[in-house]
Image (cartoon, rainbow, N blue to C red):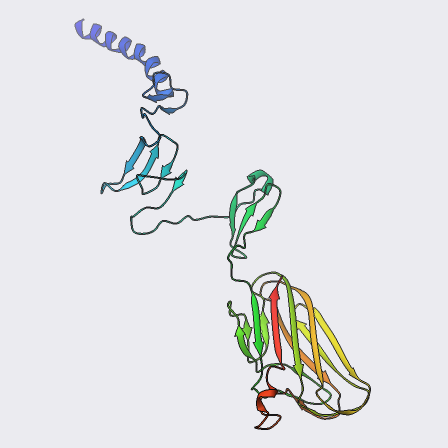
Length: 288
């Protein structure tokens, strides 16, 4: 009988305790008797630098610190800004930023995302995503030819190569072939200027410069010579073309001046005036 009564008392005690456990399990308060969230922590600090939360790993190395002023440190116990990652641990204090399909208006102004396809950081101004380009290396190519023989036969289209690269920070220009490969999608302004060595030029002839893009776009420029003579046949060809990342662009010339030509280079005017033959042939390509 005693055992039976004891079992009844245990069951009643357990049932009476259930509501209390459930109520307290719904929210937990630290330093507060009236938690308003699942976990409610009320700071006991008397200034903004008081630590609210500190989490260390098994080696007692700091992982996270939250101060009374709302500043959070990851790996540092003294965060100086809202989120401070300047820890001493292993020097691995970087942020990984991913992509999103949210509209800029939904993400709101100030949001940042990384577009892996184009390897660009974009930021939201509240209405659209814009490329973050501050301090980025600008895609630009500058090359010249003052020393390398480049023959352009009569009545023949010749791809202009044998350049000397002056500036190409992204390694997108093949100086040997003159082929430029667009590192990213955008508008590119391309210009080349070439001058043939002084030889005879037939009346009614012309020289045509072209930029040829792998996507089918073409820029053409022509210089005509109505009268015969002995002079430099030259052409300057410039224009803007849209290229997708990976598209190529190269310069070429055609002429029907009556004789084979070559670009004017050092020494064409003889040893005494050799230096006067320099800087006649140049090329530049820059993204807008």
